[in-house]
Image (cartoon, rainbow, N blue to C red; front, top):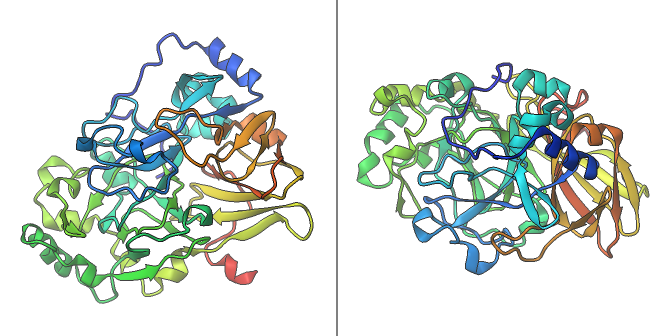
Length: 425
């Protein structure tokens, strides 16, 4: 999947008129390669927000009740959100200079891709092919899957593998259902799931009867390939993933709310919208009925550097390969009060501050308690390939730990741990 350059998205994106290469280079140089980003808020009409994203309570429906509540914040995104009635720039991150947004991150990468995402990623993908988000819901998401590259290409999209990490700072409460259903129970047949789809308009189609739920624990995570069913629970989730928004919902009702058939076939060729065998055959059957599903997908943090009196600790929180490819990864950096550390990485990354105050390079790094819709915060940055490989200085100027999450693009880390390596620690 990851070996092909992306096709142009069918979704319209802003033209970033009057933005020149010179302007992008000026911002890169003045920022020392550390780009401050504005918060990117995304609603989902079929879900209910969990209200733990620090967005001001009066702003959760800032885009209108017809759009649904805001339950996601996207990081370092050049991927448009595939929502109906979307804003033209919905899902796209903006670079901030001073007190204003100057251009989208996608425009900056279009102009200076090698400097920003690195030569290897630019030459292979000609874009930033990943992004991350928080999603935060009051209850569970319907049991669904994301198409693989071959399936998504049939509708002009990209496939979507993804990963989860449950940050402790945002999960003091678990909301309505802190459990996630993954895959299907061994022994389930394709005819069982076809029969569930036949019952779509008769209330709950019963697909969760064929799956197993796992209790979610803050500070842990999961790696989820495409074509695997999952119904994420109600913990706030940090989600590094491939740069796509394809999905198919296989559950007809969740928490008493009807899921329309259109969300099952959103990314299915039009002539297959009623072809139940085609829809079920999208699933990676062997992966879904894997009797050792948890062993194959569950993640716990692994220390990469620091600890033991070093004043900081850098942990892997997302790692492993999907179908043999290293597509994305993520780390959690904790710097103790009064400490300064220089972190070198092999590639560009998107960063979000989770706790504390300090500096990233020469820039302020502050974790807000509450954010108004449209406010320009100082908690999110995109660190370019040039800056990341040279080394970024993190300083904790506060009285509590400074904690950040940062995610990386494909094939960045030659020594990335494998799923299950946390058992060796």
